[in-house]
Image 1 (cartoon, rainbow, N blue to C red):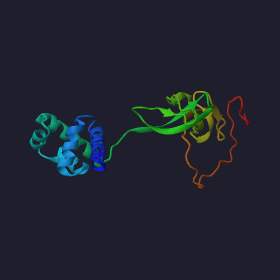
Image 2: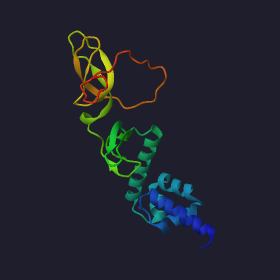
Image 3: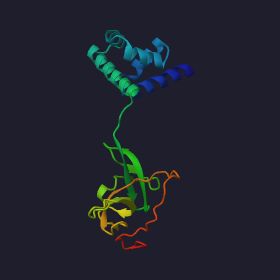
Image 4: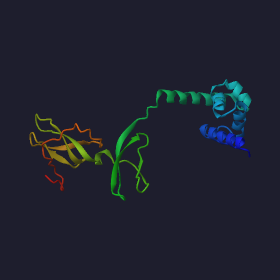
Length: 197
């Protein structure tokens, strides 16, 4: 097979993958040869009158119309920017004894451990650990403070009124800006290994 024919076959295979096998290899080779390349062939299939495309490829007209409609919807989504809902979740691998945070789409919250290559579901929100946010529940206080915590377990003392408050939520790690000021309050919680408890 000469190099030009090999290139046409390769381009046809790429288009087959793009169209998820809706056309045969021979059909796409024919279009590429007729219009002089992969991009002109693609343009013909998704933008030309459906009757012309169906006649050229010997396909049902409604089949081509549906294909073109799907293509237009995809192009519109790409132009407008696809809004995929996502969230930052905590993952952990017991075997490697490591944890990490990752932004994952809400529809499929999984992440792979980069050491052992095993996929994991996220840690449940009520079991996360890390830097926690506390809101003091003491009467007329309401102070917000932070410290290391485990959800559902850690209570930390408010340095304003002395009331022990449970952790509200865990903050995902973020890059330090250098502008964050450290508190002068010593951390103290009910954790068995708390150095100041």
